[in-house]
Image (cartoon, helix red, strand yellow):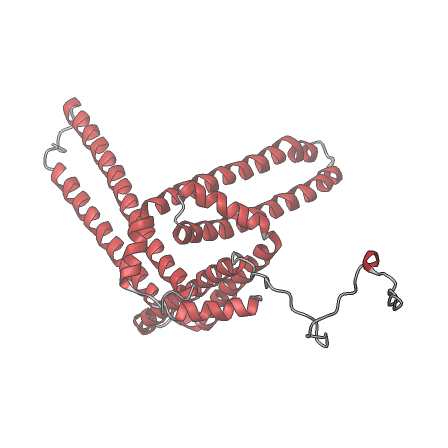
Length: 339
């Protein structure tokens, strides 16, 4: 399939799975509920610990109690943050797995669209592997950011800065421009691998039933085999999302300008913001559906060749006389004379 055909099929898959947007909204509401619940519990714990302190007198016991209470509140806050992060990661992994399962079924013509049964089946089957994939990609991203930051810092501090301090600005410029361009190109290439690799690894994890590490390796092999094809398609999807966001920001710019001067506009801005959020989610759904269609199309086995031999047009279809071999050719014998 060509890119335009893939995008058209991606639109079809996205439009038949519009319930994906509802699952994302509900997931956001559930995460907000847990966030508010943990925040309220933390506030009650903090307020309950204040009466135990005697703030009117400053003594050693009072200061030690204040420090102990502060450390307890800090530890409780960190614990609540970890709990919320785990809850949010689990909900996100479940919803992401369920939505991908429905899109894969639709793209493979095995379902007409989103179904609740497939959503919960795919989510329950792949949620833990998806959590592992989240952790792996998080580690990869942090490690790569550290490497890029370390290379940039060392290159500037050890090479460029001493050259500029020594007055050799031309040499610093001649070395600095290729160095900065190399960092930019390396960063863009890394962003491609993160964007495409994460998307394809999640699709492979749900669609093929792989584990976290296996899906990561399979996505690497898929991108390596279809590097330029995957690169151009990922750039096309990124451009689609990027320009859609720009057009939306341009369309809503008058509301952002007038909300500071006219207070009555602020109340009417909320529906516009919600509509913009849903529009961005829909564009993201189209992009994910396009990646699903692209992966399925590029991994289809080649069509089997015909086993029989078809004669060319105009050939004789009747029996063909095969000449006898030269060893069988004998001269005709004369009739023996009559006695």
